[in-house]
Length: 592
Image 1 (tube, rainbow, N blue to C red):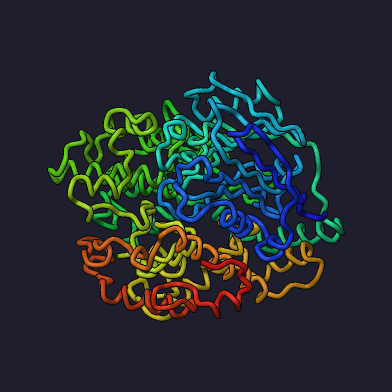
Image 2: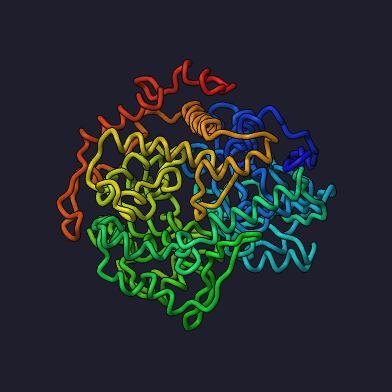
């Protein structure tokens, strides 16, 4: 079978069994791989209303069809399930080598359910699957567990693993691969930790067949030259996401001190130029020509990153402009296994509550000593970490200040405040996994390019967001990296090899829309309603006082109107539910 291995590895931890099932190729035809195929399996595997912490909640690792080939960026995987953080569908993406090696071992997907009787590691070596108790790995950080697995299992293995935060089931614990690659959002690490699994290690000796290998490789070589190794993508290699630090602050949309302002007074200390001064080398994901990874060194610490989101949330949002402290904080989060977006968001909230006299957590904006202790406290639920582990929404509600929590669908907001980019309000509110910038990114046209005004909210922003969401839904089926700005035309040039025929852009758009609507159906089935499509009131009604976005207000009434327009344009009814006509048009094979 070309591209697909045709096999799904299903592991029942409670029963202690591992079986191989054929990949459902009818679903693969409709949903391709990655996000789409994972979602279709998730729908089938979870009963409506399932508690995300239930052993029955599946932990799904899905590859895209091009994993294990030379297509740049496609060694990535999606980690899926029902989010323990938000209760919505969960899809979180991770670079590194795991996707390709899993395909070499013979599998397109791994599904883990049940509960191991003690902390264990799943070991996969081609067709040999073992559940190995690993009490000695208890409390190991991410770099330690990978080193231990290479020594104990296979020197050539790769693994996805959790740090102590996953063991303690912190709702925003993340998954690691090759130490620095993270599936960060939505609690992937908490989900694996809830199953008493420390890691899934894989070593594979097989291969992936691609049909006409010469024609396929010729197209890859041509596309690398035409679309990846170009001047347009040079920023990815030369600067990476820190390039956004100066841009977002200058546009007044960078979260500062718990999203109270959008312009960072310390921006020059932690912008791209500052990080280039401490960069010591570049790195790349497995089989990727972009090489976007930056390895930095400061006194007493070295490692990959931080990326823009960490700089914004764990820097500006908590009042930290010290690049050494920020580097060390990022490394600590990586080692303990924390999503830095939620960490910086919740910490900024705690600092804000402390300074407003609502509750004294002993942390204040810019207090470096207290700041650097927080990753360990969160991961181990010790000190203030025991309470901060509630997450932004629950923490703020407990102390009577829900208006200070910056989240949507109980997922903490990332580093782009819609008061400086109005289109982001639609992107956040309509996102299928909550506060997320990886479904639609109006920042690109409103701030980076400036091709659309940043302070308008109208029909053009509705259509733009929908088109982007459909595009990215398909992109995440193939699991192309966000840093390759691949368009439909380029994707058709690769999909023709998968489908063995010429492919049209419209076909891909239909698949993307199908996947987006399936995600909506899943969330509706699990209790998400129209009222949950929101952004915090402060982002709609409370203007900034500094920077270029000072005084600009979206307004709750205008926002509500444009969201109703979003639903209608999507073909959803007045309750924001996809209509029967829309589902039939898209060929979606499930119903509420």
